[in-house]
Amino acid sequence: MLVAGVLGGCAKDGTAGPAVAALGSATDVVTTEAKVEPLATVLEAVGTARARESIEVKSKTSNIITAIAFREDSLVHAGQVLVELDAAEARAALAEAEAVLTDSQSQFNRSRSLHAQQALSASQLEQVEAALNTSRARVDAAKAKVADATIRAGFDGRTGLRLVSVGSLVSAGTVITTLDDSSTIKLEFSVPEAHLYLLRRGQAVVAKTAGLPDARFAGQVTMLDSRIDPATRSIIVRAEIPNADGRLRPGMFMTVVLEGDPTPALLVPEAAIVPEQGHTYVFAAVGDKVERREVRTGRRRKGEVEVLSGLTQGERVVTEGTQMLRDGDKVHEVPQNAARAAAL
Image 1 (tube, rainbow, N blue to C red):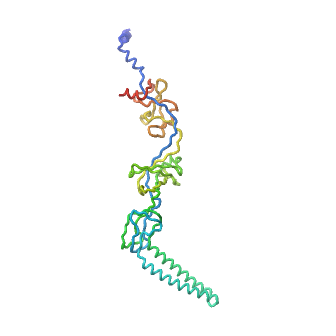
Image 2: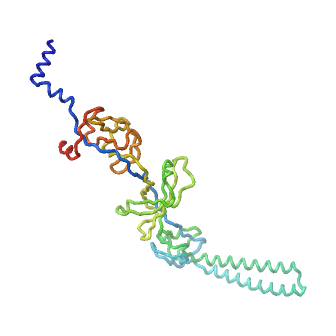
Image 3: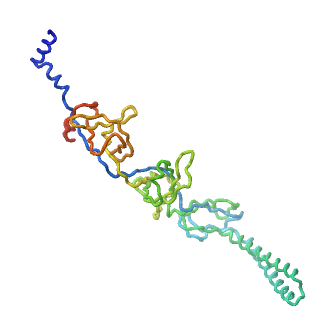
């Protein structure tokens, strides 16, 4: 009776009234509707730019350079002379081989006439013909050595640094310069096998590089490797990027972004996601209360997250005020601007 009297007295003078009322008060929150929209999976990878064609220009023989016919970092055409080597010895050998060929041809013609007159056996004629063929082969070999004294561009491209000088003696295999066809850049990068279903030939890509921070380069996927790397569980993808202006150079480190085909996804704002101890939650507004739901998330795009389970389309989730909420709390939905003004 004494306790009842004390509580009754407190109720009459109003000292306990606000405390009791606080138990039933609602928290102001901002909510938004979970909606289904098309969402594309975006992949980002890194790779190294490579020229469409790239070689090191080398000498096939040991010789002295007599002329250099190219400039560094300049465009050349297929067949254009780059370097000339001393060909005096090779030309002399060719002249000698041609003289021997002429003599062999004359002997063969005489032998054939004698064979027709039955003055020469068939085996003797075959020996003369074999000598003629040997002389022809020697002429071809001598011509090849003369040709090797002139080094030409194998394709249209841009030369690199000149690594030799006129008058220097180069040995077989000495690098004279480099030649790159960079009109198209090949960009190779790795993609995890889990995203293999997103890849296809002709798929558009966008690449960028730190060396050209404000530029974006469009291209497309041209090749997928035939194998998955068993160590990294990834596949090598090759994309080609037009480079008519020559801004991209082989060896550049590039970041490439490609998108899969859009598919429907249930999306909520990132602000609605509440991570806690390795789990992910949202507060769903049901009537004037909230339910704390564990959800499984998937793909993301700027400001939004895909929800794979734990939520259905049309349900409303709390985006502002989640810090003050517990499961089952009463809430009062307010406009976003009003909530921000109250926080200030």
